[in-house]
Image 1: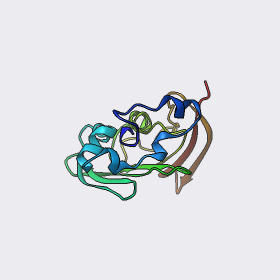
Image 2 (image 1 turned 45 degrees about the vertical axis):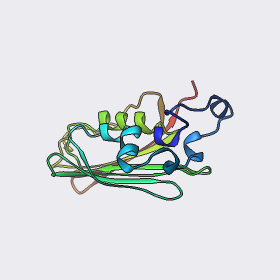
Image 3 (image 1 turned 90 degrees about the vertical axis):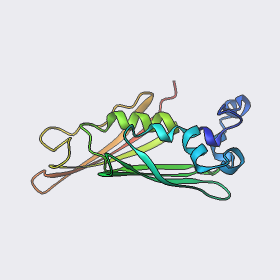
Length: 170
């Protein structure tokens, strides 16, 4: 997200050409005076249209964490970001009910722009997705799916799907 970038959210061209991850080398508190600013500059406030950030925190020397509510308090969402030169990490988790997580996954990926990502979906009969039909992996713009694991538990009334994606080279 832009809170980990130079200036107004622009990637330094020399770093980009050298293959450096400018997100991993910045200190969040150097760029953001408050968690509210970090949340807005990163685009996190736009991830969940009906969501609200309840608590957020900037860590020293770097990092960000937030917890929020969605669906009028019926669901949670949480984000943790650790920008490190050797291994940056961002996670997004929610129990928000929606007919498909594909749009939400696209928004999360567009916000964080990872080189690699893993999605894990837990689906049961009470979810909007349900287990009545085939559980399909998300198609993420600009990414190839490199692996998929699908586990069905019981009489297919609980399904866990895990997919690994990598940014396309083109």
